[in-house]
Amino acid sequence: MSASFERLIDGIIDSLQSHIVPNSNDDFVRGQVFSAIYALNGLKLAADWKAGPLLEQVRLQDDTFAAVERLAGGMAHPESPATPRIHSDVSDVAAIEALRDDGDRRLGQLLLWASGEGARAVDRAAANEIERLLRRAICDQLKIELATTPKSMLQQIAGGDGGAAQG
Figure 1 (spheres, one colour):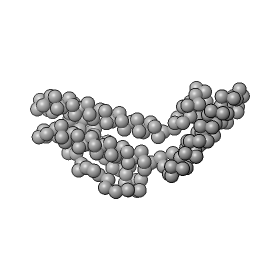
Figure 2 (cartoon, helix red, strand yellow):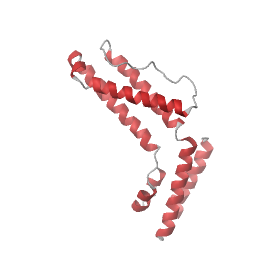
Figure 3 (cartoon, one colour):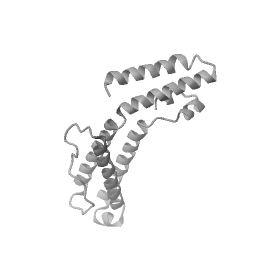
Figure 4 (spheres, helix red, strand yellow):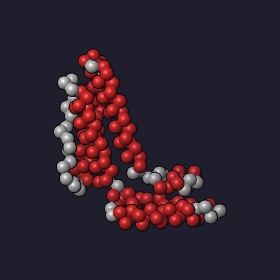
């Protein structure tokens, strides 16, 4: 998605939220406005919902794998992929999604290892640090996922929260 298209959609949404919603006392009109905001957010996400956030998640995973390798030193641990896993502007969303999903699986395996007795018996401090790193990375991935998932239109209408309509 181009930056100008994103700015256009964001501008329309901002106008609806700042000018129409606060000045409307009619629940039907407010519902229609939230409907339009929801549709615009859906359009924006459909234009670039996958490649950008997926690439961001893969890069985050790659940084985490590299940090685990540094922290683990010579400890035996589940295999981490060679990083970076994406070397150029990959546009095949299915391939990026497969990399992200494989990264999720590997992060889970590393977390199980780091939180287990085997890793702690070798180097408790390193295992604790790796576990914290992995948990933080998983939370950061969830934040990316939540930021690109629009809130339910009914949730927005029921809450009357114009700011929530931005997803």
